[in-house]
Amino acid sequence: MKRLPALLSGLLLALPLLALAVDADALRAGIEKQTDPDAKGLAIARAADAYDAGFGDIRADMEMILYDRKGRESRRQLRTRILEVQGDGDKSMSIFDAPRDVKGTAMLTWSHGVKPDDQWLYLPALKRVKRINSRNKSGPFMGSEFAYEDLGSQEVEKYHHRWLRDEPCGEGLQCWVLEQRPQYKYSGYTRRLVWIDKQHFRPMKVEFYDRKNSLLKTLTYHDYRRYEGHWWRPGRMEMVNHQNGKRTVLIWKNYRFHTGLRDSDFRKNRLKSLK
Image (cartoon, helix red, strand yellow):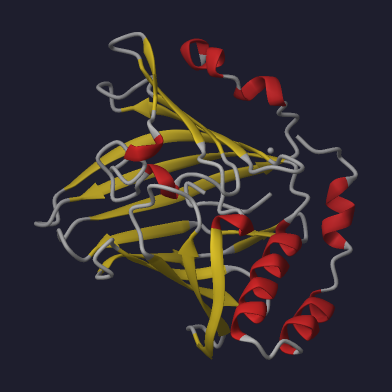
């Protein structure tokens, strides 16, 4: 169970009560008791996961804006569905509605821990469902600066977590800064640096380092809003590629929680009949 994603699952309706019962002060106190950087990093990652658990399922609308190195833009309209899964990673689906050349394209992701995520892409022009090979997860998703591996939920087990430092992270907030090293095969990254807001356990920034350990991309989260008195979601996410000069902005709208999505809504055979 994990929050986004970037582009950014089924549990019982009682689970939101569990999330609301999470004592944020107790989570922070447990973190601050840790003196070993690895133990503290893991405690922070687990606390963030626990704090966000229980959302059940989400529907949202999204605009994806692609900017090339000269600042020229192209826009795409999507719908996103997410299902929280107990004992495994979340399941998510993104469906393109516009423009016409990508309309009907759909991406399905079953996230896991150390085991490679399962991902399928439906291409309506070919009327074909293509499985994304685990060796190719570092490739760009639909021409954006988000890689396929960025699309799955970021399960705690996917990374080795190490606390590096505490520091201010804008808007009067203090953040923990973690180094996360992928524990799954074929990642395009050697490590990520993640800034997590101490007050609400929200990711504020992520730096991605390539296989040569050079800074590749930076993802920032903006315009957070709280839903149903507990769950925080960003209104905008921006991924900047420092090596090619391109960037991708995701504008999130119309978040709806507990809409009744089920596991059967996230089956591969549903991709060809989505509406």
